[in-house]
Image (cartoon, rainbow, N blue to C red):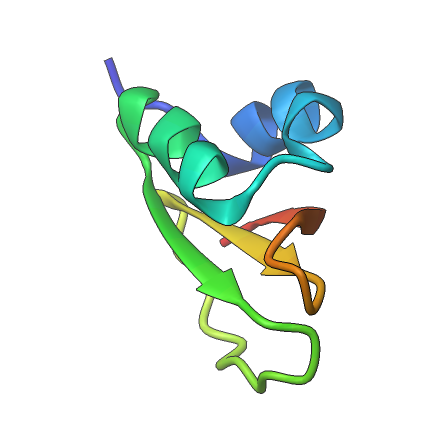
Length: 69
């Protein structure tokens, strides 16, 4: 079964915000999705991937935003 990052991120974002990035990455990967972590001032490509969740962190490495793609 293929998991769609848009649906998964919408359903799980609230649970991931506030977690350390390592714990959030583990949750994403256990769902069968790829992950990428971006720091507060880090630039990212806008390439959308249906199998990836982007985790944006603050300066203390806590997740502040969860985005599909």
